[in-house]
Image 1 (cartoon, rainbow, N blue to C red):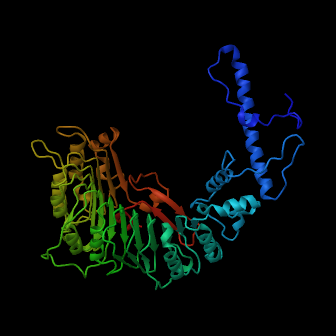
Image 2: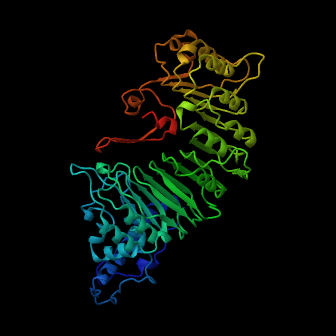
Image 3: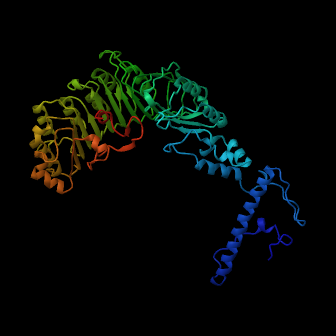
Length: 551
């Protein structure tokens, strides 16, 4: 058949059915040829539709071949495919990721600005799809000039073109030079009704700039808000949550302090909360308790509270806060604050518990961990404690299902430390304490070299248990004045365990480990990002607060 302009049958483009499958073997070649012809014509049809649409958008009159009538540009009613929607989806895949260091001074190289400058059809497609402009992930790149200024004009253009589409903002780190945080918070408040993700970090400012924040971030109309992440190194911020029905993640990491006011009776979707501050009174203990009371669906809660002046008296009656879904709880505060908060909590689903003191010199003071464990009756699998040896022993007695134990800054009392190691030693005829332990780690315990024999017996008893199965896999010592070549590492019994698969770690130079100059494994410590080009070298680590303080 000839495909000349005078003989072609345009009905073939629309009526030719797909070839029938499962034909006899003698028709295989014919079937293959029919399939290729059908697919080719389908592609030609789609191309002609797109070409006709492009001509129509430019005002070009459709061509007539003298036999068939001129074909008008396809419309939404007769077009078999949504070309603009497919094109917009392709544009979406071209949007830059946060990891890319963008040159914000050359917008024609950044999607969607670059695709909107190709032709009128592409521009109309980009401008008509608001979701292309609703994702703003910008960072202030560092340079010899000390960073870049925040592009306010383009920021407002993006907000205007995003329309009412759910808005995702991620600004920094590192942040921008000469940034007006008050104006930024005010702009976010104006667009809060369609904000979905808000992530702002001023960490890594050039020249360590400081902005006095006078505007409060009042969130009272946030039906789509899913994530709120604020990380300020020098500034104090004031956050007020009045209504956020879909909020799932709340992170306020402000070293200089922040105030948190929760007016919403229930934050039904909130599952993760992280609060960090070194301010002596912000946030207050009552702010944390109010947030816990309003979050019945919490799964993860982590707080560093330095407030000690607003604690209620020990004998005052307060309603118990029960959160069955909470599995991970981390609290670092003064002993009086820890006792006050922990005695009010009932966490039956707790699996990972971390409790420590803001005052390293007061590790002998009780933190109230025993009260939480005894009233929650939870099957805790991971326990991280920075407290007195007596309280550690009490907590171990209430944690029969424990799999991981991390002890930090134990008091430098050699006799008490020997007694604790003896409790962890499995003995014939005695009740086993935490028999399922897989990982044991000591941090900043400088008396441990004096207990090398006790440590060897404890490790050996769990590697070759008197009865039952072996669970121990790893024993670590971080900043404990123990290293390869010490009496413990040279013990023949320990050497046999290591040959059989026991992971024994001696970590003394944590900085060398983090920068990759040593092969020592950190276990659960994982390096996420290392930025050596910034004026101030920053390293983001998935560390707990006990590990972060070593930096």
